[in-house]
Image (tube, rainbow, N blue to C red):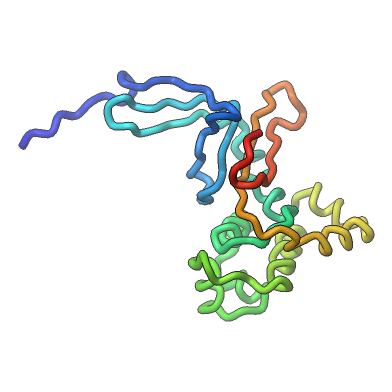
Length: 186
């Protein structure tokens, strides 16, 4: 059997993602991140995809900030995302949040084993303090706002998707990233 190779670039069809048809961005390591306003290409022959994602570092930081501030519980893959953004090995991060490395491995790999509410809040605080994210650090300086945020956490147990909207290179905030209910469209 002879396999015919093809040139994906020559067979690529260009698209721009919209609110109605956002681009599913799996490169973040999270399964629920979708982007609006980015160019992407799909090979018409093999269906491989490639995207042009502007200001990637800002996008990844905005995703982390959204995870920390959303009100629904963190998932294992979201905890892993935050840990990796900090550049911490799992053994070190498990010590920071007070669990054994084995328990921590279970947290990251499980889709059904939730963090306790207190541990979830601790993960968010650890990220907020260690990340160097100025917006998160500023938010932690406002006692009343922190109390309101802590009380609102876990208020929603609905599944959500993380929706990033590219606002353009001329915008000071190039990405707007928010947690939206799974069925919601921007």
